[in-house]
Image 1: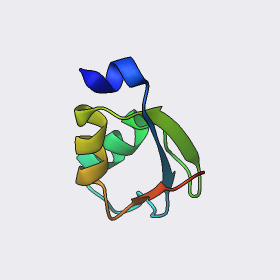
Image 2 (image 1 turned 90 degrees about the vertical axis):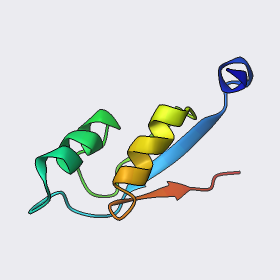
Image 3 (image 1 turned 45 degrees about the horizontal axis):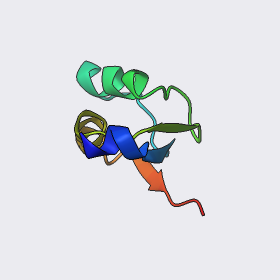
Length: 66
């Protein structure tokens, strides 16, 4: 609940190809707004987004931006 009030965000970049991956992992990438290599998306930092990132952690990385 506190994350919604503060408006925290997280930036994710796709670093792995979804080719030859299970359909669930491809669907998770699309759910995160990623579908091509080196694309970045800034998303709300919520537990559901964190879980999605964790499930495809070998295909994405969290980008630290200052």
